[in-house]
Length: 88
Image (cartoon, rainbow, N blue to C red; front, side, top):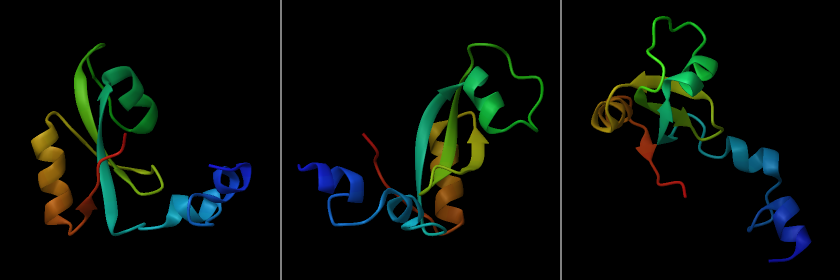
């Protein structure tokens, strides 16, 4: 991969364009600890430290939902007609 590909994505997209590609249609689930969840979802109160949670995030990384199981996060994505993708 060349520097140009890194700056503009593998297909010539800018980083900003890639971040918004699929917004409103694509999401991913990421396991997070309660401490990180508090930063992503500041309105949530009373989380126990070290608790394993699952965040449903939009294509741009914007937080959508916080769940206590991966299955619940995926079910919410499905209910809202969001395609989920694996992010590695």
